[in-house]
Length: 129
Image (cartoon, rainbow, N blue to C red; front, side, top):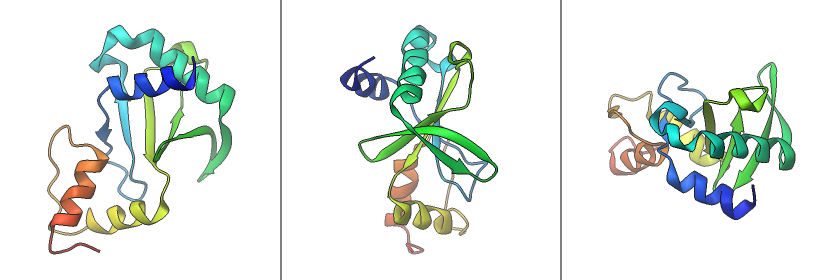
């Protein structure tokens, strides 16, 4: 997979905010949402491993890659088992604002919302931090 192919894959799938991990805002895409992209998902996971760098997250170490405003990682090894890929903003300030906002009463979770949707809601609210 090339960088351009990775970007095409990223644009072709849905990314959903992971509401269960309030202190580490991120979103994910799942193979079940678009099963016809199975090979592209595996290829993207391989691309991350081949071109990324190691990053510590609590007690775990993941290989991540930065593309655009996001960093991406997979947690499935071997990559042929990949069925989910995560991503988060690279900008720590953006993430910190989301962490604070989602803990306020103004945050309203909407099914299928993305990380950017959360950020837009934050900016539009009276609780903008």
